[in-house]
Image (cartoon, rainbow, N blue to C red; front, side, top):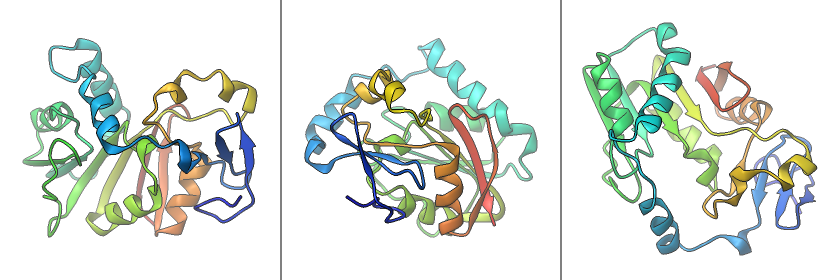
Length: 208
């Protein structure tokens, strides 16, 4: 077995997952992927609205991590917005002039084409991706010169025993898991660099 990203030899983790000791990416084996219909049904069960105070607070804390360091606050894209564009609205409420949002199920119009952005957010999305490098390359292509990419996804501890007990992998739509090192290598592979991370679930990137 070889890592789909760095092509290094992988080890078997918790029976169904491939772990790469080089880039530290963990991926669910393809034969365990669920189909798009079941995937969407899982998302439909999420309570993602302004009425959910915990959901809104999560986004506010996410934005607070990097907000004061943003060089420009004009245009933004929320990639993977879910059924309700809550984060996009919060960003707009904070003063951005234009905020677009995209979701493959709920807002499939690729509005980001022929546009560019000062900020690209992607929260609780990368763990669902089959090819995270492809998405980072897309982000780079639509990111303004001094722009910021801000990603939220829970990082694994790089320990198999911890992984076996980890609640985050119980969601059948979660297929790819990362550490900050994984993102450093992904960023380097597509002309980006890591700016900052909380080493838990948030990481920011910009042009190299």
